[in-house]
Image (cartoon, rainbow, N blue to C red; front, side, top):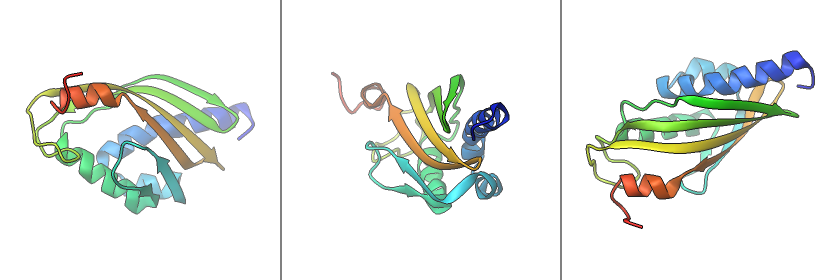
Amino acid sequence: MDTPMGREHDKQVAREYFDAFIRGDRDWWQRNVRPDFRRHDPGLPYEVVGIEGLQHHHDVLLAGVPDLNLPIHDVMEDDGKVLVRLRFRGTHTGEFLGHAPTGGAIDVEVFDLFRLEGGQLVEHWAMVDSLSLLKQLGATSI
């Protein structure tokens, strides 16, 4: 949206996305995520498309990190796109993307860029500090 109110709305939708994601809130997704929503994330071994894709992604992440929290540090908007800088934090107590539980803490930085149309999420580009994540999972010692 082009108006200041639209920009604030888009930023609020992006902020709310993370809490709704942790809750697996399908009602929120129905209201705020377009059916053709797509997450672009080269680090995932599966696609995240639409609400079913979000549900699958939620189930995978929360199975590995059931106490997941996503504290937000910055939110910026420009021309229908919202950039969010946040942390991915929790305890690795379940299988996580093919890695056996370590019981250790996970804390990595994430940048998420969202594109909205008509106040709804359409696309999501995720940039995760994958090297730090792999180190914390014990998958590499680089």
